[in-house]
Length: 155
Image (tube, rainbow, N blue to C red; front, side, top):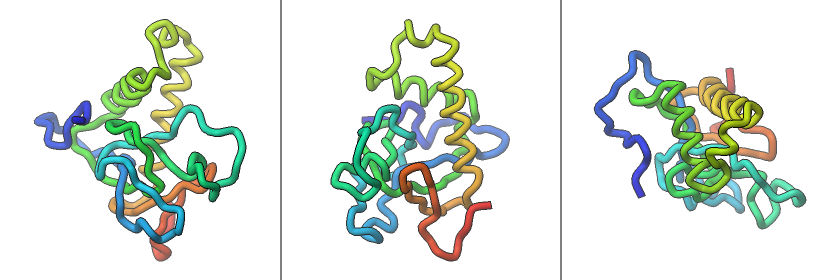
């Protein structure tokens, strides 16, 4: 599979954008770590998760994010800078990813509520990446995203 915008794309923005990507770094830090995503691919929160369970159950829904290329999950994410992205391109990538997985249809995209939710999701992902240092490895613990390296802290 290839990413919608490859990391070696010719387009460059004035300032690099921080984003969350899948990583295998620090895998094994927790006994229930997993990374089935492609190293370096953009990740997002899955729109639908299991309704029950705990953050450390066998499912893993409450501790992972999904790769936007592979559609596979990881429990570890890394903050990187990308020169080929800006908010508009990132929004399109998020939208196209959810369409490709069947979460969105053209009819749903006509709904102001759905469009607002997509903008909120995009902004949330941008905000979370912006709050951590570049190269920081993060983990998700239910509704909390935190840095794994003990000496690093969110701004």
